[in-house]
Structures are given as structure tokens and as C-alpha cells.
Image (cartoon, rainbow, N blue to C red; front, side):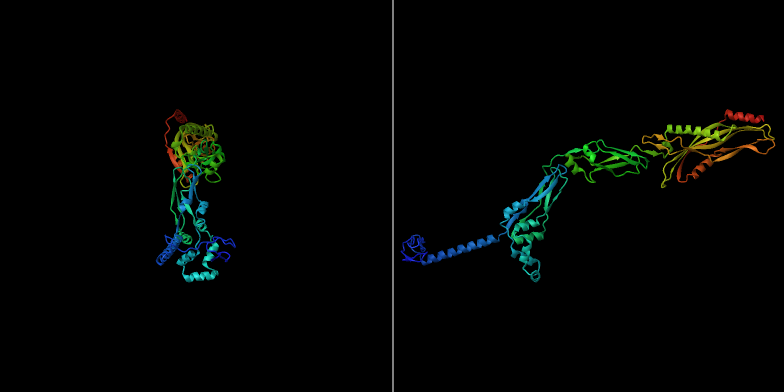
Length: 491
């Protein structure tokens, strides 16, 4: 007889089900040998030892597997991509957090005891206890309150890196991603998560960037200048003909103190910066160049040497000066004075000395005048007549002679000065009225000597350099002089 394994009532040994409760009876047969007979004492002991050994092996293997660190290659989850246009592409990197979480979210846990062990390596046990006393709780608890429980979140928190180069990329360029994870952070995370993180630089070739169209912002552009060198000024910049040029700003590095031949750099901008991004976004094309050098031209410049004066301009000034001298002599003289000869001797050119704040120039056309004086008074008690040629020097000064960039000289012929204040006297010695001691005399406006004229010009222009191109000459004997001498002999 045996008892039911479920209700406890006695039932027959051969019953498989209890007749009282219907519960199935499990067979409880002892160990048997292969032939069905009960094992001997030695066999039973051997079996028990084998079972114990197997259990120990399984426990050791489980412990080893449990303590084995998981190796994680973070490079597998870092993706580098490119966007933009060829020659101006940009690289970006992205950590695939979703895939990483899917692969390791259930495998990685933070081992709080590892946190303590790691900290104990960094600080003394006494300091650690003092810190826990200050917190009022364990380091493990404090740390877990600030760190997500999942090891994947801890690892994602230290993921960082840089790409070089990152911008202005062209298809075919090579970029490198470098991890920015400190050794200390790496060691801490590996200790906390019982894992080994594998990281290395990632190098990748740039591809997939779209070809971008270009336009020349200086095609059809123009620049003009005004003023007189070396004080020329930027006058106007005309934008290029492309539609995109109408919203761009053209700037120059120099706007004043310009001379012909100087270079001016013009740069196109948008909102004060590089217009490339705006143009590609708005018009689907970029400037082929954003700056260009222009040569200054079209400015007049002051003549600095008499050799720069064109022959035509000099002839015009000489013609004007000779008319002015003749008219002037006629105005201050009287019927007794005539111009017998007028000889051009050359010129003095004055230009500002270096370092003085002056501009412009002046050109003195110098002439030698032979004036014929003819006066007689038969009633004079003494000398009856005066017939004499008087030689003297005059000038006609023109102002601010300019040369164009083509070498053409211009000057205002209506603006000139003559030596109105410089004069000397000529006395005929002939009484104007018989019995009176007063004789006929004249003021002659000019200089008796050439060197006196030159000294006067120099002294009145001390802040200027003087270029001397004057050479004195003697008048040839003329019919007028011979006639005057013959009349003198008659009296």
C-alpha cells in the first residue's frame, strides 16, 4: 500500500491515479543499472560525485560568463554624411542612438558596486566616507540619482567628436572623425557598465555633393573715379548684369587719395558677409569670385614737370600770354609807347614741396619785351626829344595745369596773372611844358633784370619747388631800332 501524493489516503501500489481524488501518481523509482537491477554502493557514490562536479562546472562557467566584459565598437554607430554643393559642402556626424539602444539597451546595466570601487581608486576610503556622511546616503545611491539606470544612456552621455575638415568640401576630399572622449571618462564608463569600449578615428571620402552653377558678379560691372590725382575719389560702382547682383553690396578697400595706376579691390557681400550661402539658396548658383582688383584710371593729375606739358597746350598758353602782354602794355602806356619786339624766353614751373599740405601748380611764361619810346617837345628849353628802345621782362602765370591719363594737358586760359605790382621808371628828360622843370616819364610794369624777376617769384612761393626753364636772349637789330636811332641824331 502507498499513500496518495495529493489527498494522502492509502491506495494500491500499482494505482497510477487516486480512486479518491483522481490525482496522478508520479513513479518514485530508485536508481537502476543498465540491466535494471539496483546499483551497488560504489556506483551510487560515483554518480553523486559526477553530478556535483557537473553542477560546480556549470556554476563556474556561469560566473565566468557573468564576469566577462562586453566589447562595444562605437565606430559602428557613428555615421558621417555630407550635404551642400561641390566645393562648398559640409560634413556632419550623427550617433545612431536608436540602433545602439536596440543592440545593448537590455544588456548593459550600471554596476553600482563598480562605481564605489572606481571612486575608491580615485579618493581615500576616509574621504569617501566623509563624502557619504555629508550626503547622508551612499555614493551608489547619490550617483544613481543623477545617472540613468541604463548603461547605454551613460555611454551615450560621453559620445562626442569632431570632423576635420568640416566645411568647403569637394567631392573626393577626405575627412576624419576623431572621438573626443577623455581617458578618465572612458575608464569610468567601462568600470560602471563592465564593458570595453572600442573607438578609433574614422576616415571617409566626400561624395554625393551636387555640382553648383556659378555666375560672375563682376560681369557687366563698372567702376568710375573722379577728382584730381593724388586726391582722386571713388565715384560710382555699377553692379554686374546678373539678377543676383542687384541684391549684393559692392565694397572697396580704398575710396580716397587715389592716383592713376593705383589698384582698388572690390568685394561683393550680402548683409556684410559672404554671399555664397544666400545666392545658392535664393538663386541656385554661387559667385565665381567675390573680389576683384580694378586699376584706377580716368583721373586728371597735376603737371609736375614742364616736360609733361603737351606742345598744343603750351602753344595755346603762349598765344594767350602774348595777347595779354600786348593788351596790358597798351592799357597802362600811351601813344608814345609801342611794342617793338616780344621774345619768349621759357618758363618757370612751381610745384608744392614734399611734406606741405598743398596741391596744384603754376606756370610762369617769361617774355622779354622791347618797348619803343618816342616823345618830343620842340618847345622844351633843354632836350627836345626822346627816342629809345627799353628792354625789360614780364611774365604771364597760368594756374593748375592738368594732364589726363592719356597725356593731354588742360588749363583754363582765362585765368592768368601778370606782374601788375612790379615796375620801374623811364624818364625821357624832355620837359612837357617849356619853362617847367617837370619832364615826361612813364611807369613800366615789369622787371629791368631777369634775375630780379626770378628772385621775386621764388620769394613769393617759398613752399614750392621751382623748375627753371628760362634762358635770356639778346634782341637782334631791328628796323624799328635803327629808325629810332636816326631820329635821335636829327635832334
